[in-house]
Amino acid sequence: MTGSGVLWGIKGKKTGFEETEAQGQFFRSTIVDIATRLRVARGIGKTETDASIEAFETLQQRGYPDVPPPLVSDGWGGIREALVETYGKVPEYGGRGRPPTRKRPQPGWKYLQVIKQPRKTGGAPRLKVVFGDEETVLAELAHHTAYVERTHLTMRQFDSRITRKGLGFSKDLDMYTYAAALEDVVYNLARPLKSLRVRINDDSPRRWEPRTPAMAAGLTDHVWTIKEMLKIRIVFTNS
Image 1: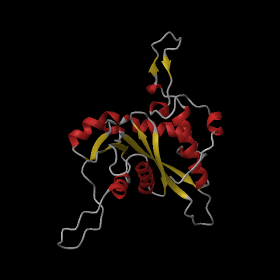
Image 2: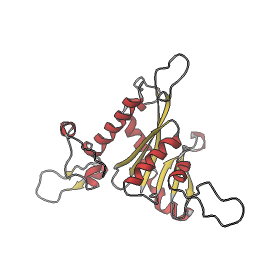
Image 3: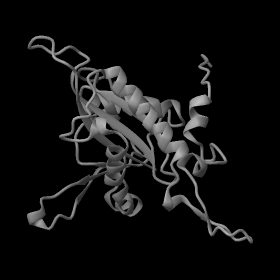
Image 4: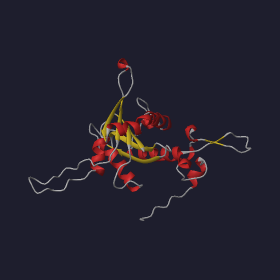
């Protein structure tokens, strides 16, 4: 199961009175595995839908090529449209009328939105089932809704480029993208999470073993240092 959230940043120096394609407001969509807290995909785009499409296309390459995993997100728009664009299919032509051309949601999808409510109404979020059987989706995903906002808070603490009303915003899209990638690597490999620690039952003086999301996902066996990450050479192949 994963949770997806959207954060925005203001970037770019204006040329005269016009903005280029790499300037203005951009959105960032991040998909996090709920069980391990691992950030598994990321997208950045001019709209929420574009950012989420990029994230879902990455997710397709990482184990979900045909059907999306169960999803929990905040109440921002764009994710529903991105799901349909990425995973939806055009219905087969039945032989009558015009052939269908628009993609449609598919059976088996599960998607829950957590919509913030004004404080004057009590502040409790409203849960909206977008795809799937309501009873099943709520039973499976409702108790994971807190992770969406927690993910947003962690991102803003890590990266001042997405802090609202701050001075750390990027003026270059490439630098914004690189910062997001570095943040995800540090979060996955070098930041132990208290909720992921495991109790040590031997005679060790330590009671708990710290674990990072990458350790919980079985991708590594230790907490990485920043020095270790910076010394690793990444080799890209076509396979």
